[in-house]
Image (cartoon, rainbow over all chains, first blue to last red; front, side, top):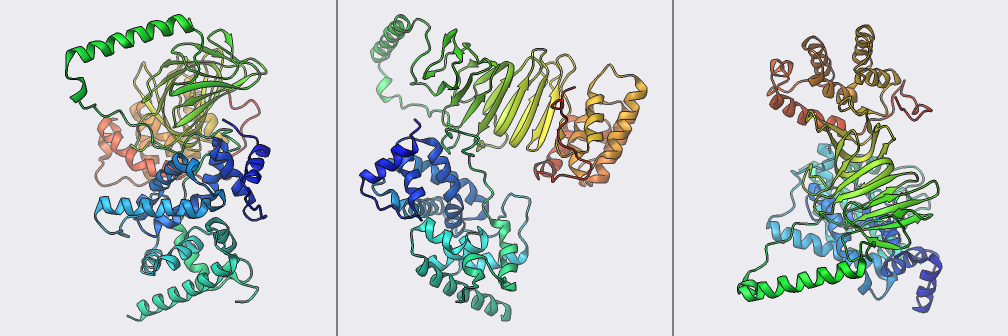
Length: 191
Length: 367
């Protein structure tokens, strides 16, 4: 069922959701997707796929992360109707992705390994593998932030928009994460 | 943190270490292609292909009288259904549905208004002003352009068979989880195609001439008469004339000389001199991605030309140690299969436009 954009905006307004310029588009898309609009869901897929992939890549082998992105969106499609606050879509989707990664690792009963490479034409260099390994050794939040920024190519404002965090917080966290990574890489170089 | 903060927004002077890390780590970036909303007005679910249903537990069906009651109910239901619908398109409860996206197409000889469940063998006909969409469960859709005639011959959720008598369809199916699994079988008057997940366009004219262009994913073409198979990866196209056998796939980025030579080689009624000239052009113009076209010629040519083709491919992509050249020269199916697997990654690494590659010809590239 296709839902007119105007209808979706109306639904959002009725729900009393604040529409600031940063998130209003996503909220409209989520509301439309909740009404069964597949086009809106496809747009959400485009908008959030890198974020979801980043969360998965922070936890599972690179060769599995891409397939799991589809799994996460399938679950999201099934459950998006239950999401009460469309403004929290990014955070909710992130939770789905983290849970999916946990399920995956539990079933595999083995930790993520960097021995597996992405299937694409670009083979990661030794430096890339070492850098990813170093990022994966960091705590959860800096790990995700650095993968979004350095691997997925998302900018700080994009990260803030997708995750629903404030720009100020993300900016500070991103710089701290980068400092931690530099320190780790330098230590590894010395050792 | 200055305003000129490359880490934050990627603007300003890049930090050299950061830029190097970004470049290296981009090899791990997400490369999946989500459905394009502009191409897919109503995108299919980003889902796995449907799994075959698991065998049901027999616990509730063990007693014969339960089975008998179920069978009777089914028969009554089918009978009532036949009386109520009398062959009219059904409202969707089905895995496959059809709907008009523009104008009023005709389906099962009636105007198509709204969305209906598909009927096996019912023709969908679009005119100048009509377009339609066939929704394939939760794994894809076929967009039927104007002036097309198409039907679904087999309504099997795991492998529907779609016949395109003439016209144009654009397919969008999600990548199958099993490698090289067939999602949809497509039939035209000249070919049989196995959609293995991707985005493609299939055009068929009244004479049966068929052109397949794949934008993403892969489609395998099969000649029912000779059992030959052609793999058409993303970025390639393949044209086939009825009665001429399967065409040879070429990348759209190949040089115009090579594309014309391959087409000419496909035409069996070309005289020997012109065949030889085109063969030479094909060899000379070929670059690494064109091993796709050369490989598909190996089985079709005489031993002298086969030797030249095999050597040209080996020059472009070295032969692995486990494949013997002499077996290739004898066109042994097993050796060719192994060689194809070796070459497939080259074909799947979508080639970039090359010098000498021209835009599609004004006539749409038709023979």
